[in-house]
Length: 473
View 1 (spheres, rainbow, N blue to C red):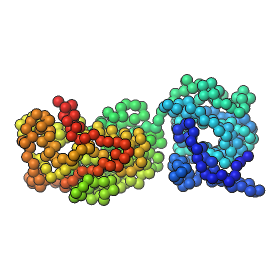
View 2 (cartoon, one colour):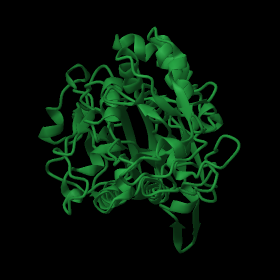
View 3 (cartoon, rainbow, N blue to C red):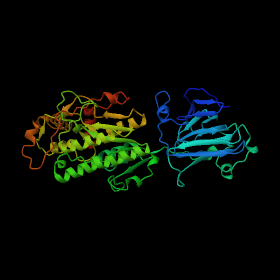
View 4 (cartoon, rainbow, N blue to C red):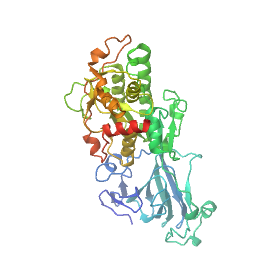
């Protein structure tokens, strides 16, 4: 019999993410009423049901006691309840991982519901006639959807069905599903890395590797400005997008053509990804820049400091930040002075040293280097640990340096006299420039406290510089 007057509460199970809900049901002589799904209450602190974004509601009506439906793991999340009657439910974890094969069983009546995460096998047996089994899902059914199945009679999982399976009617398909040893586990949702052929994209490929749940897309594989971007992938198959695609030519961005290209890549494309992420419940990782600040702050910039970009590039990155901040699940990763495996400041200085050239280098801009390997490692940390969504500064750690100090350190580490590097002001350095020059923030130091709070400690940028040069020899 349905239990009345319970308060809304949840309990966990041995299967990660499988959550049982006790629902308040209000009844009298006329019948009963319940809020079967109430988003605001059920996603509130203390209940903490995932805000899974249901898009379809299905009802399975069962005439007879003992109706038994097979253990099916589907590629979407599912919220299961009973409108009338009562069921014995059995759930088996069929996802890759340590809990593969874990079993949970319970009875459901109209006063209970259960949240079933993607990849957990779902099955039931009716305990009363005229049972209406209802479920919300967060993707539309498709004949192309990939399921994982387990046989109802599997001896390893050994579900203790209230009514023996030889006394109930089971479909031929369910009778022929594999035992646990023959089940191909459901893989996790995918991570898409855009801009995969750039310096950061290549570092992300090195960090994540070639697992089948990682997908890499360069510009030729995925046009982020295409009108058909919504249909370019089945986006519900992805849990995260790491956008490593960006326009970074800060000086060219001050020209007419460069301005248009910078806004297209850093704003229009980002807006398209933000729309897709929001619609499909995807975590969007957006890489930002110290150029969103004007550099006048005497201390390191925190994530909450007001944005005051000086040039076109900084303006486009600030606009991208504002757009991504509207995505429910987002990480905005602000970084500075990025060094990767292509042409960059460190390689240029090492080359000048080797060729006997004594350069003039700016000494009134201060910051920390960020090597792409470290940036990729930090991004993976945020995703792997399910860190709180929001903005994080991510650079190398250690004492800030000017560009001239870094250049001298490069000379020293490559066996050359660091005094050959002459420090000059920004104005002096660009005084003879014939093309437009973007204004630079003088202080690019980013405070790393928020990132440290997630358990990630960036490596010292000087140590990474030394290792980078040693690997380049």
